[in-house]
Amino acid sequence: MRIGVLGTGTIASAVVRGIAEDGHQITVSRRSAARSEALAQEYEAVRVADNQEVVDQSDVIFLGLMAGRAKETLGAVTFRAGQQVISFMADVPLEEVGEMVRPAGAAAIMMPFPGIAKGGSPIMMQGDRGLVEEIFGARNSVFALKDEAEMQAYLCAQAVLSPVAAMVGQAADWLGQRVDDRAQGEAFLRMLVASSLAGAECGELVEALNTPGGYNQRLRLHMESGGMGAMLVEGLGALEGGD
Image (cartoon, rainbow, N blue to C red; front, side, top):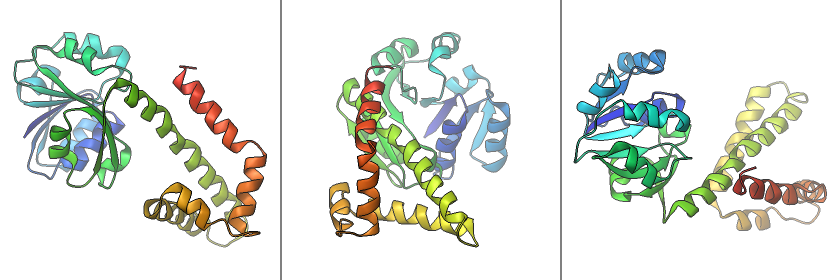
């Protein structure tokens, strides 16, 4: 495909790295010049251009823009009929994206994570699942959502990633004070969590780790008694309410 990328931040750069060797012709905007130039030097399929040339040279366009600047940026370029636009902007509904890119079509909203650069990443998306699967599905898992409400709910729930990472990091710090190799300890914990969650549903895993008096049960009960579960639900509700 001929793919263009408007906005080359951290996530958009990860997306480009994830598909740069798939035979596409990719044109990235000069915005975030250091990142765009690094991509062009790293991959033969990637070139850098100004925003209008990115659009002119592409049939599928990724929007890696900040939502607050999207209308200004997109208003300065001209799209054409038949182009398909995939937005990475979480706070801009698909219908609104469509209004900003006419006469091109707003095909999908998708929320990539940094892991998409190497593959094996979940992708939550709303819109044209077939197009997203065609570009990213070979190495990633696409989770199609039926409407904007589902997208917003997923956006809230995915925020669990940061506290989970922080908690694993804190456990690694605790472990690092008691063993010789702190880095090895963190690598062990990351692999333990990732492989365990990948291999079982959450309820099944909790039950499997629920040995009476066992380490896992004792720590979970201690944290739950401190309000861990209630705080999580309260925090998700606050995100849903826009707080």
